[in-house]
Length: 265
Image (cartoon, rainbow, N blue to C red; front, side, top):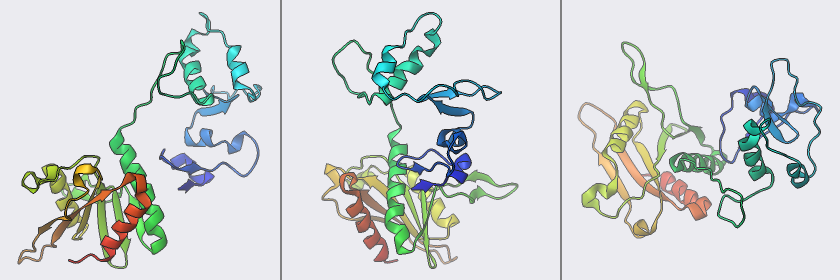
């Protein structure tokens, strides 16, 4: 996924996304200042700009990180920059976040895996489905659980796909299911309530829950839950469970496309 320079001011930070710089040379084309207003890069380091725009504009970009870091001395005058320098060194020197020998304190970045999984799967789905004529919307907005006395409780399914007259809802869940139908495979009851509401509000019967594949579910039979239509004409709800093989996600999502294309109501 690429975000053009003129859209950076409203863009979200998304994994596996390319943020394009401006077409003219100079500070006005820097990505960081557009993506994160109030920040810029000077000499390879992020800084907060002063109100008058002055600061480190005259500092040249480092061409030898190791040599420049060796010149850094942390004392009482520069103590406030100690953590900044340590983190800068981690990134600029490509230091590992795993354990290693030496006196350097090891650090780690922690990410909420449900967000990483959701973002990764969404971006890969776009690569597979967009070329096939599907309109793919991530974190879809616009519908609410209630409209009166005002719009309240926004609905935001992870992925909404549309093609011709079909609407398909896909929601990612970072959870390991169990191969036991008597325990509902470990599926959360609140997740099912959520999918049922998506079905009604988006007027579609095609709902898919996307879980990561793991050993216990490799031999599991296809899982599908169906809510039959009532005489009052309510749309039937079908919740399909699909497992994403993360180490071969392209083939896994092609399999999902085949299942969606062969979907039987």
